[in-house]
Length: 161
Image (tube, rainbow, N blue to C red; front, side, top):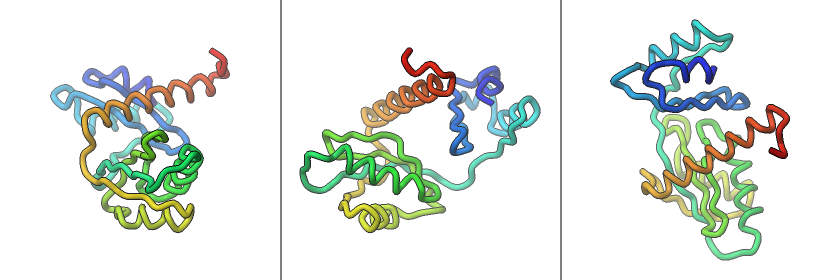
């Protein structure tokens, strides 16, 4: 799917997450439309593509209090949130006690996300909803790229390289 998308004029980046059955495509809207991207995948690969509905927003969750086990705590919260419909954890920042995510506003509320995290992990989190600062967005994109490369290396059996 990625190779088909990357061959399309106007596609800047394309990353497929097979375990979530999703692809994230950055493209130039002056050169290609979402409909053309979907048609390219459906016509040139064994996959079926469609556009996700709804609206997505970014937010950060900050863990209240200090602690030596922030990495462990944030991983526990991320595991719980990963299972919620419409929630995608983007990055963890243990030194600052933060977790960054994207959520579908038509599937889940901020209150539900925070409530679920507390009820299932015991950790109290404070939400900062809305657009992330440019620096935070850049950090998320960088971390996502690193994770994707690591995933590909594992997939191709090249863990140590």
